[in-house]
Image (cartoon, rainbow, N blue to C red; front, side, top):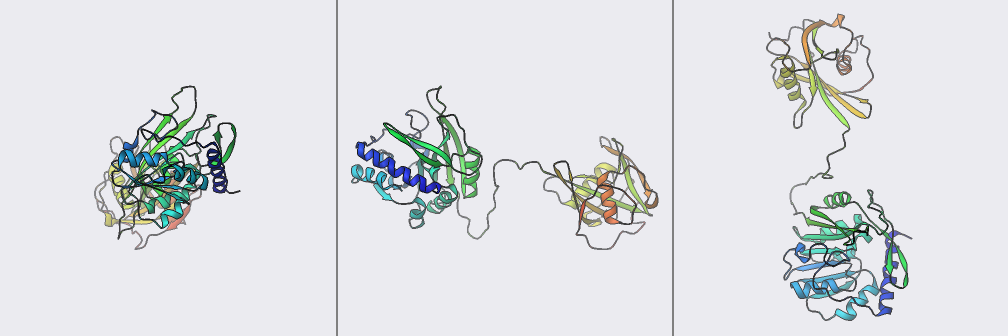
Length: 399
């Protein structure tokens, strides 16, 4: 049985048993986001809902919807999939002003309704696949509308949230009756934030609300999000997550300066001989990186138009993907000299037919990508050529 079908059956049985007991929860004096009174904020997290259309997702017996209408003047629609839970609400609260109860699937309902001014779910959204519920909620809320979600974080057995978007078995506990198995999306706060961001919401706060009894392991999470505004006429972009990307790649440049059939090499403090170059900084073009590194390491001055990019070399060093962009610098000003606090110095011109041993791997890869006839041994790298234009000629340097 599919996860949501399992949940449909479970909540039907739950409502049926509560109807048999003739139990109706009282309308609360304050909206609470956990099963425990006095823990966490109240209805104020929804903002001013007076006269506003508010959606109660999985409204159950309807007591929360009635409280918002009576105490805060909201116009509340309670959407409930379970027919027996819906029956519990309408049998007691059908004539409450400002409240209507609808039986049906929330995603299907929102597809045909006018946008709401706010929406909330108290312990219920975790029973619906978020890849189905969240895009429906985005389309069913007006821009800027708050979405407040109370969700399970850690259960009675101390089992914490999942880091993958997949349901797992959780039990609905009933007094004097066997528990009902469900399939629930119990996700980490970061994963909920990623999903909400993916589907057009901005997460404003996530609070963890533990059980008031310190011996109990149960924790609820309260997520406060807001539907992002529409941006007609422009295609949007956004981060996948608030987390920084996992460190995976190193990107650098190396520059070939050719003068009278000699190339410029410096000695690194660790002994290797290498071309001028280094890491690319954020927001920097490859040409700008070449010019900056050339000036920092050698004191030479070049212009963007003097730099011809050869292409990219890609290899792996351990678990790091290394991307090196080779370049030819056709003209420069000054004489190469060792610069203070730089790791490479002792710059000298070396004939192409008398290159020294001990070249830095990246420099060696750039040189053979430029001149495959050079007899240089190095570890392999995949080269993609994207430069065009005249080849460098001896004597291009401007002293």
